[in-house]
Length: 343
Image (cartoon, rainbow, N blue to C red; front, side, top):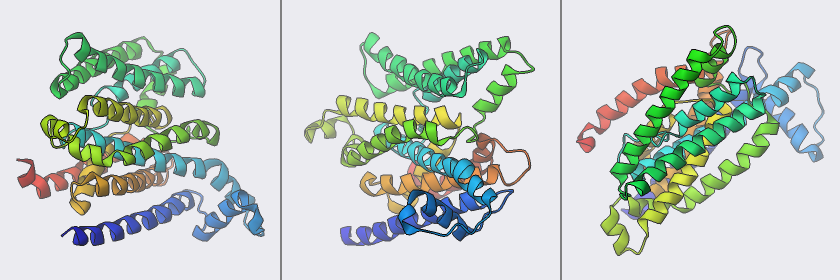
């Protein structure tokens, strides 16, 4: 049986990696201005691997579209989709609840408040992204403080604390929207909370991507511990794992992944909820196999959504609209297939 599972896992992971590359190039190629598939590869290679000495026989418009506009978006979509999927998978294992998503502890709500405040005061884009990051981290820190105050560190109390903080953040967002100028800042706040990768630039990604890659690597290294945590506290203690400490590490890593994602793309739902379910149907519940595949599938899903967002209409469609329209029916199908195991 273990050999059979390994035989399934390796091809699935290989196909996921190959499909990620294909979708990555397609997401740069497809748009209102089309760039041929192999031209995309050659344009990127000529800039980042100059030793290849590729002759630039493509239009200058193609080079600008690829390097200045679409490449940063594709990288952002790949890392954000993978980060949200990995964070969702880690939370679902840790909380032993398949309905859990990365924003359960209030990180997305806190990030929205931080970004909205920055937009309200007409701050530059770098301060909006920083405000979103600080708001998300602050919200989770408050959530983690509540169980210590009431001296009960159970998972249920932690989730309830997240609901409290999320509700407070939603109330603050309502106040900010009520005070915002309807002609300017209110529209900007609304558009930001609907999610978009139009703000993705290489300069910002240079700060965000290393942090997210480090968090993803650490989560991948914790795959065995996530398996043990999903068994329960007694089993974890018998295996010598300090579940409270491990839970804190998972929360910190998942919070950083989600806060970084929201700071670049705004609020994007469904990725961290749907992708782990789809991956479990393919690989099974073992995090050692499921987590790496979920990472790639999350990136593929997010790149596809961004590609549709800027290709279906002259006006770009917000990401949360597409992820909701496409993610919710997919999740319904997943629930139908898994209904017996969820009972």
